[in-house]
Image (cartoon, helix red, strand yellow):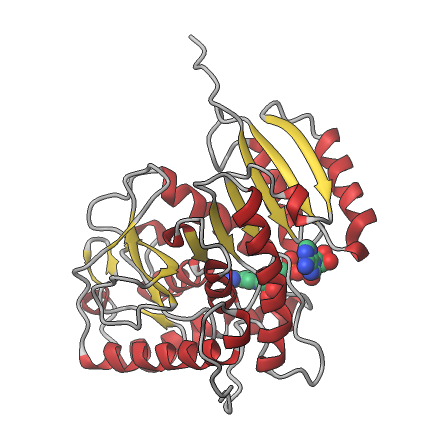
Length: 352
Ligand SMILES: NC(=O)c1ccc[n+]([C@@H]2O[C@H](COP(=O)([O-])OP(=O)(O)OC[C@H]3O[C@@H](n4cnc5c(N)ncnc54)[C@H](O)[C@@H]3O)[C@@H](O)[C@H]2O)c1
């Protein structure tokens, strides 16, 4: 018996000619993300400079003869490309150039997200879900959320799943176990080097990770920098930033919202902190442990254990996000103008 196909899902992707999209688009079209009975149409946004490359991407998609790929639309005007989108995967952003400070990057990329959020607010599906990948992704998502008042704030996500996957990999390697035995791993906070990979609540083969890896010095002092600096280590080896594993983590992120989360497990996503049970400032996009019923929505898990060590780490990442928010007050309607006080220039994972 053949199962019937669902209504076509419209997926807008920005930075569609970039290296992450070069992996992701083919995963989406193959059906491995949203299911093999879910037709999709791809609505690809490029920049003026990447227009020709975008046409090349579309040619490769056409030549792949994916039965689930109903159509591919290209453009450089977000008002046209985002029309009726059910998902917007916001990957396009400018990388930090030589001598550029973090506050300059916040401003340049923040402006992209003002424009794109306004377009989504006008033309996307009323339940459109947004995943921001372009860095600095938490603050870009916060800017987007405040510039799309007619879309649900809870539908804005920023990607921290790559950090979660990296944390699981390091725990599995240290424990000498296969990575599928590592569960309940949350990476909290900002997608930056202040991120907080949580080994306190993590489990390995159903036991607390700290009861399996009996090396608290490694957990406290080596594990976190290993995860946070993984992107930089990869650039040194490979000469370019992670693209394939980022695309895989985007696919994992999306699947986590459409497959019920197993009992006792979680996934990490940076979401609007309003009403969060951990006392994090409510007007931030902050990565937290979440679960889903598989309906595309999520809830923040409220019973993670927070000890003093973890609380102090969360505070550092929260403080950094508060400073980032102060730097983009001019891009958030109704926000008070604050002093941009980023003195210590923390890195994005992959920059150091
Ligand atoms: N959150 C995460 O875990 C994570 C991981 C890896 C990379 N990233 C970020 O993802 C972003 C993309 O990475 P990449 O390796 O694919 O970069 P890339 O440079 O290969 O591609 C980016 C593409 O975006 C396009 N672009 C720039 N501004 C645009 C705009 N306003 N509208 C539409 N397209 C635009 C560029 O022309 C380019 O084709 C970067 O900001 C990177 O820092 C985030």
